[in-house]
Image (cartoon, rainbow, N blue to C red; front, side):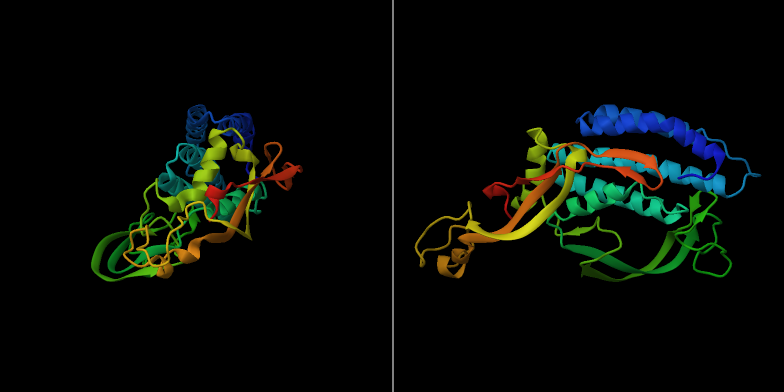
Length: 307
C-alpha cells in the first residue's frame, strides 16, 4: 500500500491497533473504537517530514491520515445509525465516502483493501430517502489557493484544484462572492450533504434505515456483516393502510376523498431484503488480498419496513 519505508513501517505498526478499532466498531463499542483511532491519529501526526524529503513521503502520510479519518467516519456512521440519528448518519456516510475517494485517487498503485467498504457504503446509501439536493452557483471574485495564496483560477497560481502537493490538497478558499447566480435542485450533486427537503429522524421516510438500526439494536446484524440491500417487487398489504369508504374524506388529512387519494395505496410492491454474512468481514490491509465472508443469507424485512 505504501512505497516509502518511513510510512510503510509506521503503517505496519499501526495495523493491529486499526484492526482492534474495527473490531470494537463491529462489537458496538463505538467509544472504544474512537479512543483507539484518536491514539493512532496522534502517531500519524508524529511521522516526521523534512523539507528535503521527496514529495512521496508527505503524500503517503496524507493518505495514511485519510485512512484513519475513514475509519473514524465509518465508526461514527454506524454509531449514528444504531442510535437512530439518521440525518447525522447521512453526514457521516458522506464523510466516509469522501475519504474513500481520496484514498483511491492518491494511492499509487490503486489499493484494493477498501473495495468491501466502498461497496457496503454504496448499498447503505440506497436505504436513505434522499433523492434531491440543493446546489448553488456563485459568481466568485477571488478564490485563494490553499497552498500558495494566489487566485487559484489565475495563471499566477501553479496548482491544480483537487491535486495533492507535499501532503496538501489544493483547493480554492472563496474570500469574495460577487453574487449568487442561482440555486438549483439537482439529483446528482458533487456534494450530497445539502439535502432537499430536510427530514426529521422520526419521519416515516427513514423506514429502511430505521429497520437497519433495529437489526443492530437486536444484535441480529453487526457493521461488518452487512453486505447489501436487495430491492425487489413483491405485492403485499400496506400495514399503514386504513380501510374506509371511497367517498369519505381521506384519513391522511389531505382534504380529498379517499378514492382520489390513498385508495391506491392498499398494496405495496417495493420490498427490500438486507443481505448479511454469517460472520464479520475481515479486513486484510495487504494490496491485492482480501478475506471476507462466503456464507451469506438474507434477513427478510418485516412488513413495516417495506418501501
